[in-house]
Amino acid sequence: MRCGDFKESYLEDEKIFQTWFVKFWLGLLLVCLLLFPLLADAYMLYIANIIGFAIIGAVGLNLLTGFTGQISLGHAAFVGVGGYATAILMTRLDLPFWVALPIAGLVTAGVGMVIGIPSLRVKGLYLVIATLAAQFILEYVFMHWESMTRGIRGINVPPPRIGGFVFDTERSFYFITLILVFLGVAFARNLVRTKWGRAFVAIRDRDLAAEIMGINLFRYKLAAFAVSSFYAGIAGGLWVAFMKIVTPEHFPFSLSIQYLAMVIVGGLGTVLGSIFGAVFMTLVPELLNVLTGATKYLFPGMDQLFIPLKEVIFGVLIVSFLIFEPHGLAEIWNRTKNFFTLWPFSY
Amino acid sequence: MQSTTPHNEFNPEQYQLSVQGLFLRFGGVNVLADVTTGVRKGEIFAIIGPNGAGKTCLLNCINRFYHPNQGRIFFEGHDITGLKAHDIAQLGIARTFQNVELFKGMTVLDNIKLGRHAHLDTGVLSAGFYFGKARRTELELRKEIEETIIDLLEIEHIRKKKVGTLPYGLQKRVELARALAMRPKVLLLDEPVTGMNLEETEDITRFILDIHDERDVTIILIEHDMGVVMDISDRVCVLDFGVKIAEGKPEEIRHSELVIKAYLGEKDLTYSRLGA
Image (tube, rainbow over the protein chains, first blue to last red):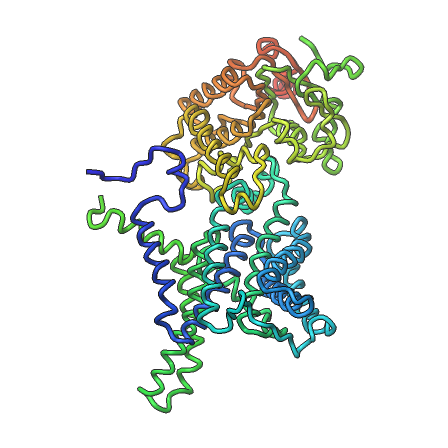
């Protein structure tokens, strides 16, 4: 009987999904995700799309903050740059969505690199302030560069289309989101197991030793900012095409905080953690909404109490996750997995 | 015994790695004052001296981690004084640190793989899709590390562990492994056996000798353990307060009066007259 997981080549040992068990369950998850739009209603699909955008954005921020250790409070602004770039490319240059989206990603990557320049000189809290400045400057630009962004009136964006098919419903857009989430997560997961990912983590853990190991700090910090902003740009572009409009108030400072919270609650420095964090931070408030909605019928007249309670519960949940598992949801997941590998015989 | 070489006689061609007239000042303090020395290809060269003599600073200057105020550094006939720290790694000058400077959140394997960084040229797209070149280089690297480095240093059992969880002795060994992955021509070892018991010291010394013999690496060693220094080094250089006070074969250094004075101090006549 085979009583363990033995590998016979380095290739097998370097794989991300190592056992048939894992592959089976992931396959099943993929099938469920593909069947989901057949069963879900428009509201659930709307939430699913929003979760998808959050995952792409959070994976990007995790590459920068979790892996490279450069804390950024300007992530929402980068999402905004991607959104506006997509909108402007689609409306002014009449580019199809499929061309505008990657270009918007590259534009955002460029902006991210410029914002990342101070990271060579400043670290930690000081960098937080530098990126915070970027957030407010970019927000100001969205608002006041009227000739380009049309200010607070915003830009109406046509939905993406292939031939005669228009992706203008939550259901059809879901498939675009799903594919891009899949690509984004796979890309990040692969990136972190090669030279690039190792360099990022090395910069986070000990930047001076990293330099002596031959890592060009300037280049790799900027690369981290570029990759992270590219993800933000894609998330922004998708968001805008989904909402069919872009206005400055879509990308407030609080969204930057929310992205940071996703990454921290999910688990810094793990791609899986960004997914958990994004799902948690998007889904839990919605679930609490549903719950408070239900309690309204059970305890009539108590709305005044339940609606503020929702925010409190959400806050308490985040704080307790941080206290009981500072390494995030991804670590809880790993521990659960390890528990069951030997279950029911723990030795 | 050759004393401090005068500048006009100094010829960098004769050495693989050398420093000439090196000055390093922090504020008003001369950390290194006019240090001129060099190591020949294939040597084991030890740098010794009391605490604060400037030994680690000398290595940091070679790594371009500190910028000397004056003086030049030569490697294989080229002046490398103007290069950046990350360029030095690519030339083949590898380094371990006095206080272990590993990447604590990474596994042992990833730490060692990181050593090869400067020699990999995977593009970001190829890396992200783990396709073609990225995949091939990663697998080759893994194979080479497993079969030449991990096997040599006997750390198979910890390869998947996070470095931060390992005991000090093993961390030192992992750091040596990482330096080996840098494809070194010259290996700078900063106190490799400090804080180790006799057995661990013997292990590490054996590894150093193995590396030197099998991989044809020049070794520069800072160490306080005189047993190790005198046993394995071909030449020894002694620093005291940033000044080179002696250089030569171990047996010459052992009997040098200047060195004995630097380590033990002079017999103080005032106190001896008092009978203390």
